[in-house]
Amino acid sequence: MRLVLFGPPGVGKGTQAHLLVERYRLHHISTGDLLRAAIKADTPLGREAKQYISAGRLVPGRLVRTLAEAVMAEAGYDQFILDGYPRTVEQAEWLTAFLAEHDAPLDAVLSLRVPADRIVQRLSRRRIHKVTGESYHLDFNPPPPDVDPAHVVQRPDDRPEAIRKRLQVYEEETKPLETYFRAQGLFVELDGVGPIETVFQRIEAVLAQRTTAS
Ligand code: AMP
Image 1: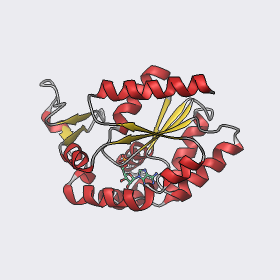
Image 2: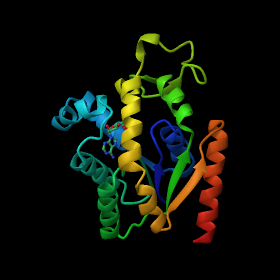
Image 3: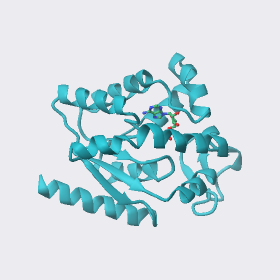
Image 4: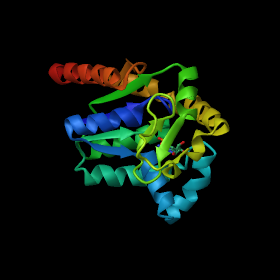
């Protein structure tokens, strides 16, 4: 199974990706996570990407392309879920060509739909465990009492100015991919509002239908 999780920042792509990984034993390929790991490791790529990320802008496509293609190759070009890649039409064209070369077409692009005001609410109250990467929400999913509060931090790009920038970048550069993937018959839109498990059940229903249909 080869999937893309699509949608603006803050719709729950990372959360749903983790559940999909557990359920279907997929490799989770999050270009955002890969970039943050490169920043933490202070690699040349990480140093180049850093200022784009904290400003809420897209990093140059060649950097994410290298990261994403290496991990898809490691996964044997199968059993993966892409989260945060592709984010531009150019990246989608690279992906389509890359997968065609390896005879490994996508099965579906799952798009989570959440109203904009909820997205801002989710992102601005999101906190991350800086060691485990676990994601929390101060109101709906607060860190458990045994977690050291010093480890719970806000992502620099979850500050209000960066959130606004990321949403604007999404509208301008990423949303046009909807048309691209619709034309390939891959685009499936799902309601991303509701408890995490409910959204996951919607995803499972779509996958069950598409697997039976193919
Ligand atoms: P995410 O964790 O997916 O929200 O990504 C965090 C940030 O990493 C984004 O706001 C971008 O700055 C950068 N990034 C992640 N994936 C990509 C991509 N496919 N293309 C360009 N920049 C990306």
